[in-house]
Length: 334
Image 1 (cartoon, rainbow, N blue to C red):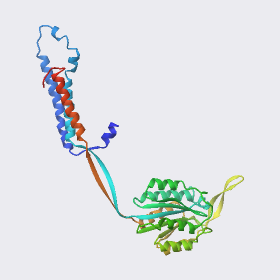
Image 2: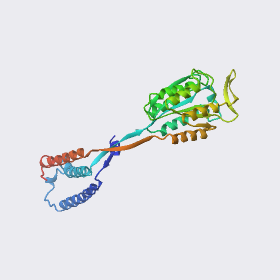
Image 3: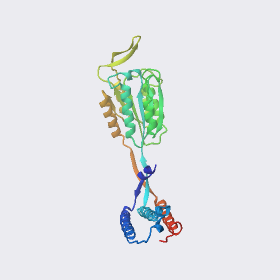
Image 4: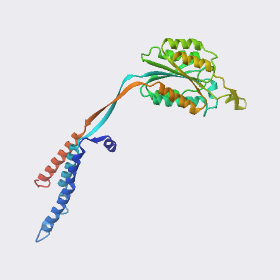
């Protein structure tokens, strides 16, 4: 614990540590003085020195040691030990963002490593880390939609919510309109000047209560920009299928409604992207991160807390103890 305390300490006036050079000088002087004193003593008998091995003789160097420790404490106090606390303050306009992620069964296709869903989760978590001050929400959808995490700046909560995304949490299907509508609902009461939805899917709309076109019009009405991402390779992709013999891999045709996704992005002021592999998906999120920069200024306020007082008190206490030893037990005035 003491070493942890020292790790947090800095010194405002470290030049005063040069005074610590007095300590080795005093030690040398003390050793020479005591050596010459002992060499100059003449006695007629050894009887008067029978108590040299007594406890008084053992303590005779203690006052000098206490004085050295006192000087060390006072020098440390003069160097002004202090702790530093940094407080970050953000000022400006952030961006409110909803990550809308398809969790339908087709997202387990393995044309990405290890599959589309896990690849999407990884880049989403990296994106969350890159947005220092923005509020982010997580919405998932398949045959229906669900808010996995409301708008928050708590990165740990967001990344945990993404990590908990699994296939089978919702009724299967691809309800793009429901996913977008739920995302818009998360943002409609936002007072942020910039509101964004990043919608990721690997299929075509085939269900839900709200059509994609209607959801797009709602997004436009609330001034919400939508970036759309189509996930999947060209042609066919390996897809795990459960059978009585276990899980087998079957080739499944990749069908992405790129026309719809381009329409949603284009009419809301966003952009459509196609991700064909893990690297491409990561680059897409980096590009979106660059397009949606937060207008936030972060200032750091540093507070210092002085810690010299305990060293002063200990130093004075050691001097007082030295004085008391000299005038009482050792019967020697300084």
